[in-house]
Image (tube, rainbow, N blue to C red; front, side, top):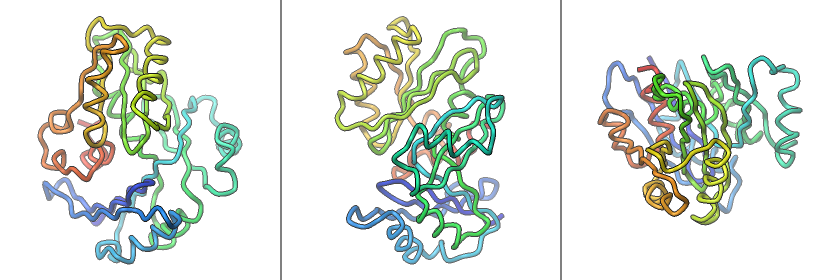
Length: 265
């Protein structure tokens, strides 16, 4: 099966072609973004500079790190999706395209967006592409690894590329999700303390889990004792059963989870 995954973020664009039934490792290319030009210009340059992006694929998944909004399934109307999204993120109106991912068995949808120009460029090159949020596979993984024998809430903290995503799972259900821009380490502690207090999390056992991209996540896990929380650092290698993909340092955890479909195991 010829498939391509493209992860677009403010820092880099990653191309990965992977058939988990045939190979242990994907073919991939990482293109750092030039901060002095637009995201669309970076997408153009990355596609032209990457040989694997010139091939034909049966399936293409494009992931974006734009803001997300969780909506209960029973309250969702596709005709209102853009209005709901722009009400919460007014600065993106006029320059982004609103999309959504379903979260199976979670009774929710995840609204997200992609830069309109960059999205048009990507779908011009890959007409059959499907758009997704970086957080979709991550949330499904968090819920899938929650033990149904537990009745206590868990707080998952994901620190990646200057953004902190907090997800609360309780009794196998998704109760809260939000992403915050992080400008310094103290920001993370502030946001985590607020959500921990809201859901009654304290230092009685490991109910706070931290993962992320790069060394910052491990540092955050160690520092949560300052606000009275015991944290468990989710090492990619251990979480993904020591699969070779887990050792690819250029891949954020959310991309690894998607490629391995870890939430389906």
